[in-house]
Length: 320
Length: 320
Image (cartoon, rainbow over the protein chains, first blue to last red):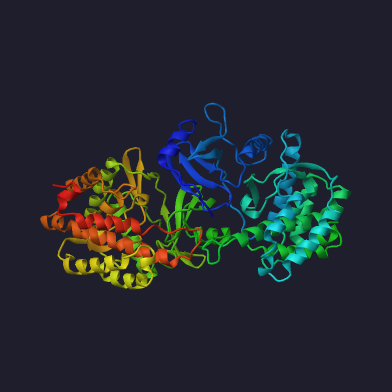
């Protein structure tokens, strides 16, 4: 939960005067998201989200994210739509930070998703991949395999304080991933962070996808692997094959997975687990002892990694 | 900023099924407030605030706060109105915490209030005092003079780490306050925490008062003294006599201050500064070094206290 930059009413009123979205009635910082500062803005024209991009998001990447949301929304993906200002631009500055206004999406994110929600996210992910097919911009995945060794080096000296032997296990796994990581699978725009808190539902229906600030160009099946990690494990970190099957089948009904993609899924899932294990581990070690804000548990992804290491084929994920 | 208790959609849907406020469309934790967890809830009937009362608020006090908001709203004070459930109750439980739904108030709080805003708050405070005149319930002020020595004792061993000599200054001031603290001034319901973030404006007009969770029965003029401290100092902690005059005159136009109240105002202002100095000091010392969440600066109120110690009469506040 986070609002890193405070916004005064004068700042905001000045910024909104460049838009045709009515009169400002209220705004409140939202205690969700860890990368940016988000405000729920109520105007006489309705509800909007104001995002201030903080230092963890590179300003040079913002045009990619904004154009992507516009592109996807125009193709029927229910995602936040950047609002154009009077000059036709979609990026500005508030309180010294780059900022954008996007439409507000109703919907609830599922703290405890069931198999039907997993099917919903599988279907939506495939539709996102198809809708992104003709998106003209590219963005390298800054948190893919090339990034993992440097992240590991950052954590190496103190990593074993989190769990004895952790660093040796990571080092061994990085060697495996270097050898087995696929390269010639279908590429395209991926969300790369489609966790439950980024997917909204109304009743049983998926109503929207948010937070495209890790989106990039990478293997589409890697995005599926990220979702398997994020959606198909129980709170005790055991894999739920019913949820996995629901997610993969729903995905494949919209966009078929090639034989090569299916075969690569276990190693992609290991890589996805490694990515979140490493970033969480670095964050964990960066927070001083006794701090009030607790970062996410890196060992959750260590346990998921261990499961993926035991997988022999995609059938173990519940997918035939 | 704070959301201490996470609420699942199932928790919330179950709770809302007891109310006639339409279908749940979204809810988001709000990054404001330090005592409770607040969520902005959007339903097909509009916007509401869900508050989960955390441990710093005594559950036995909740009926007082809820009844007070209802009483004040019925008398034209624009404050959050507790929503009745289907059984007519206004308190329930969500995620194991006591909880209430209140109406959502539009409006913006002033990060940099000017004299006109100070006049607005003075007028609103006086109206609140009058509207509370026939409120039937009582609540002792748990943070009045009897509480200050125990708070000081909590901070005493490490208080000088914040500023050398701080503890001796506090001890000397507590002696003065014990001697001079008035007792026979008009009592009634006071807000006791009417800081800028608890007062909303739309354009130049005050549009609402929120956060009644320090409200209690105490001297009305003490509430005025709290507002003088909270609204009439500049960021460099210098007193702005124009703002003070605006606040006091606007108050007195609605509810006249007696000669005794005027005379007591400097000592009441010292007491109010002491109350916030002490609670901030205790919070400051309770937070581990290096924590990400920084508590409010206690020395802001030390500097305000020093100003009030120099005041000779209410005229020094700009009030004749």
